[in-house]
Length: 112
Image (cartoon, rainbow, N blue to C red; front, top):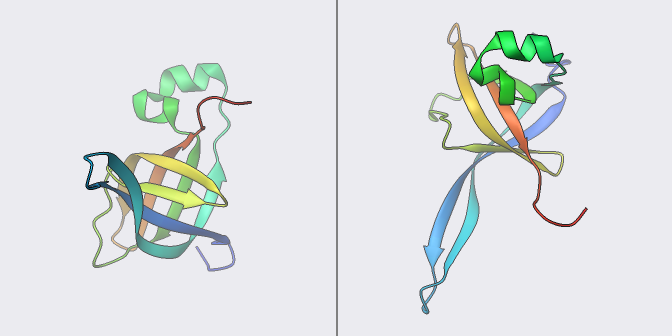
């Protein structure tokens, strides 16, 4: 996969919870890495989703990017891309060179 296909800029983030002086918890994102990635929105028919298993049924987007040697990406992390936030459903190592992440888009609650 060449760099020409990696045209999405993503941030890998970890949620950090901090309490203020009055004991209220505030969640903030800590950016762990900013990388270029290949992004593919997954569109599957209902039959394909039934047959694919649990990991594929909720995943809406696939991200593929170069391995970051100093970072172990887990399902506890999230991805921000183009103003949207994605929770990581599964992470796969692709021959030690790439990381493939299946993620689910997070929609804000309320409003319309």
